[in-house]
Image (cartoon, rainbow, N blue to C red; front, side):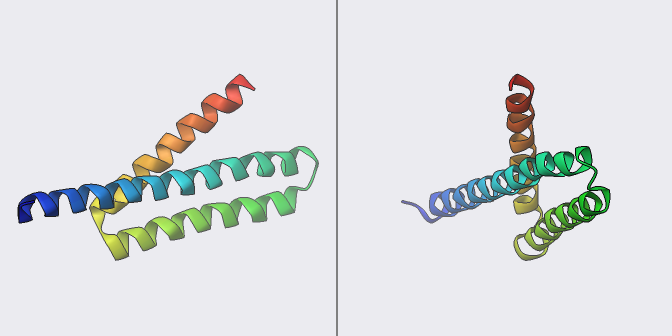
Length: 96
C-alpha cells in the first residue's frame, strides 16, 4: 500500500468513526426528547425545562469538544451523523 493510499484510508476511517459518533450522539439527544415531552405532558414543567437545558448543553458540549479536539472535518461528519439519527428517529416516531 502506498503512503498516499494509507493516509487517504486512514482519513476516511476517521471520518466514518466521527459520523458514527455523531449518530450515537443524535440518537441519545433525540430519544431523550421523548422523555422531555412526557415530562411536559404530565405537568412536570420545571423538571422538563431543566432536562431540556441539560440535553441541549450536553449535545453542544460534545460538538464543541469534537470541533476543538478533532477539527472541522470531524465536526462536519459528527453533525451529519446527528442529522441522520434525527431523520431516522422522526421517521420511526411518525410511523409508531
